[in-house]
Length: 99
Image 1 (cartoon, rainbow, N blue to C red):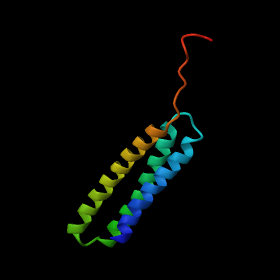
Image 2 (tube, rainbow, N blue to C red; image 1 turned 60 degrees about the vertical axis):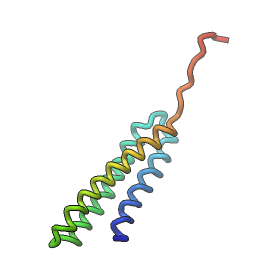
Image 3 (cartoon, rainbow, N blue to C red; image 1 turned 90 degrees about the vertical axis):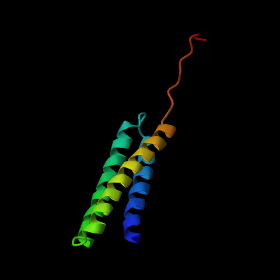
Image 4 (cartoon, rainbow, N blue to C red; image 1 turned 120 degrees about the vertical axis):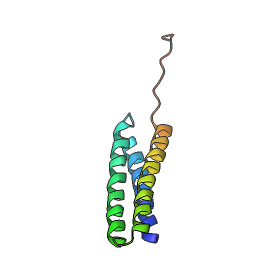
């Protein structure tokens, strides 16, 4: 179980750190969010393959593990989207008066 949660934690930390790092280089948060989603999905796929290999003969633990990986992937993407929307650069509003 420790390895299971370490895959999820690694995906969370990796996607948040990468997206915040890339947000500094772009004015919009669309590209950092896509890159963080790709990192998140790739780390979850590695963890999912590990989970399937370990629990191949035991259906009672195989199916819930797959469901938990899918749920954690969507929760991490949602948290990442919320964090990026909080820290995205604000557009400067132009004043009506030029002076």
